[in-house]
Length: 140
Image (cartoon, rainbow, N blue to C red):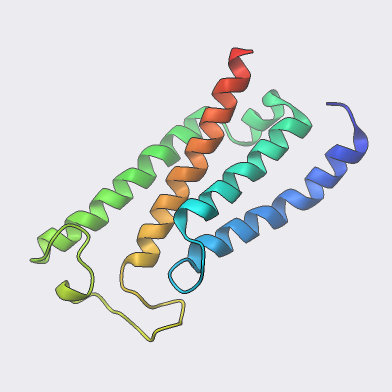
């Protein structure tokens, strides 16, 4: 698309969308949201960028190698967090029962490893949304 207005508005609004997606991910354990919805918002911001600037500019901004590493890294991080619970004598993804710091309810640093889990899910969902959209666009 060669529309100057669309490109300008996209360039201005995408960083705000991404910050909001990160906010949703990081506050998912104390408010509505979490890894899936925040990851969907982050992925959607890159879809907007791809639709405005085209696939070649979007893959320059976020190459397939990077999204592949993020996809793998998100799931590996999730699995490692789950295995930490087993290694500390609990079940997969154990939290309070194995002694993780729980903090005060309603604060960012609360809920043990749940914020770390939502970050892993957010990374995985965002990179998967971007990869799927770019794959669909490439096939046309």
